[in-house]
Length: 158
Image 1 (cartoon, rainbow, N blue to C red):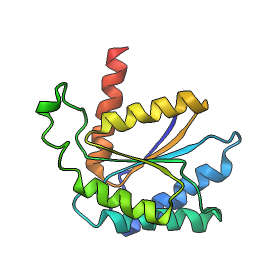
Image 2 (spheres, rainbow, N blue to C red):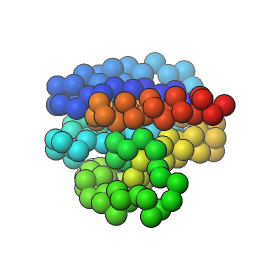
Image 3 (cartoon, one colour):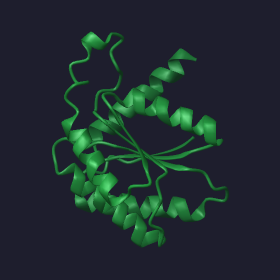
């Protein structure tokens, strides 16, 4: 997996991230599927994610960019017990962003998760199935911080 990480969380930073990521897409030698891991809880997440998609589309000339998208909370790790997961039933923000994405890009396989860890596990599974994956993690500095914590935890477990 090639992880592309950016804490973009405003329209200006989303547009800059889109330009940077579009460069990654146009310079890839080998075609890999592309996945988005996204969250934004303090601003209009639907508007930001759609702006991201439109900016990447403008920069690449390609409409269908992401084969998969995971919309998750900023919680790094899922609790061991479902009874300990107060967020699992409150994913309204993530579902709203996922619904907005789905209307704009219906061909993307979409998942909604209560933790970043679940989105990372999903990315690893897709990468194994499809022999590689390019992943953009963006939308929130909290998301990026939690994502780095999840990856650090994985390295410690090795």
